[in-house]
Amino acid sequence: MLTPFDDFPIHQTGDPIAQTVSADPNHYDRYFFNGFDRDGAFMIGGAMGHYPNRGVVDAAFSFVIDGVEHSVFASGLMPIDRATTIGPITVEVVEPLRQIRLVIAPNEHGLSGNLLFRARTAAIEEPKQTIVRNSTKIMDYTRLTQWGTWEGTVTVGDRTIEVSAETTFGVRDRSWGVRGVGTQAPTNFPAAAPEIFWLWAPLHFDDICTHLALFEHSDGSRWMQSALVVPVLDSPAAPTYGDVPKAEELEGVAYELQWQPGKREMESAAIEVTHADGSVDRIEFEPFYTFRMRGIGYMHPHWAHGSIHGELEVGGESIALEDFAPLDPSSIHIQTLCRVRMGDRVGVGVLEQLVFGPHAPTGLTGILDGFQPT
Image (cartoon, rainbow, N blue to C red; front, side):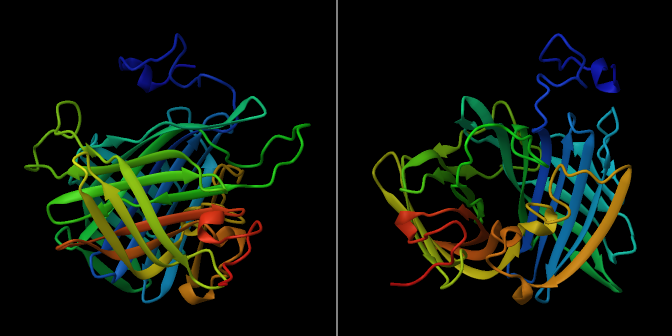
């Protein structure tokens, strides 16, 4: 089937753009956003995903303020042209790899907004993330990450919050490929216990940005790592792709991570990174509070990514941060908003944490058991 995108010279196969390279139901194409006041006054979360082999498009927007995580969700039938509007939520690519607008129209759930992301850095490509199990690729995707600022307004109930680019930073990513979404097809393979240890830390400082992404097995052996120092743009018109200043790839990464007792959530954290010349920088994290990624659909019991909701369904929720059950599966995927320090530099960012199963280096046991100090 032809769509408007077939008018552009972007084809990767001999098929129309609307036809995916395989019929894998886990094929997806996703936007992710976060944003945060540099002093922790509020935090923004956003996501939109297309699942062409499931016929689903879904999106969510979340805003944390005054200790409450407010969210609005939408899911429905994916249009053949992959339009980036579902229900009240729209993602508009104003200028590719430079400006993206996120619009949440007024709705019955009392959360709306109009926000513009402006790039602070070029877009970087993370290493391909691939897991093969039983000779089947259960995860195989590419992600770009980009640092920027947010400006605009968010309205919660009868209160409108001004979001200023001078004080509101954030990260957006785009990922696409294969990742487990929605209800999974049954197989005859023996069940395997879940095992994942994931840390992701894109950070903003005045003169640079830094990046960390890593996966480990339960014994601490690392199967994916990316650590970078990313230059900020020289000017608003500086290129954001192609001929751009190269990010510095760091050669060594070590982390210190202490969990809160009874939880899988950081109490304290630090990262040490080694440069090519052998010098070491230490980044320390001072948490403000933790955002539960269920607020934008990750492992949500009703609004999980790629789940089926018919032609259109819109919903919302508001949950006090202290009321989340920390070991509920929907609450395990988190981003902790932190002030960060690297030498004399003081910045802001998140430490994303997702840990299922045991992890010997940090003292976790069981599938979802909380940390027990010895």
